[in-house]
Length: 155
Image 1 (tube, rainbow, N blue to C red):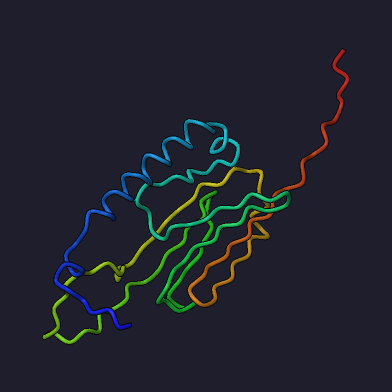
Image 2 (cartoon, rainbow, N blue to C red; image 1 turned 30 degrees about the vertical axis):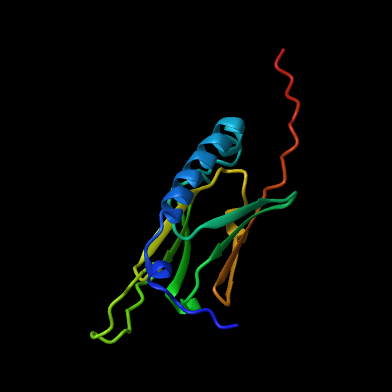
């Protein structure tokens, strides 16, 4: 069965507006429920309306950031670390549509972007690795091994 587009299907909906509000509410709720999370890792994970959206996974040995960046090549994506800040950036993609075409709805991101994460000193910044394949960026940030406390006789 073939489904045809009707004028009703092309009208913008309020679904995205609802989801954006819901995302903000969820981020705030998680931030209140786990206030130590950002302090422990030194990262503001809950940046509202940020692009690219990321999944952040905390494992025993690493912190893993996974971002979907469709439509860009590896050469168009940059991952940098400077002074405790990890930055994901992408260059602008040109819109290749002919001038006589008009958008009915436009949701794809075609502009440059940059998103940064402040990381705590508990990570080994010298060993950060990134892999970008098929629009999926995977950044692995190893955790430092906790130093054993030394006993110092004071008196």
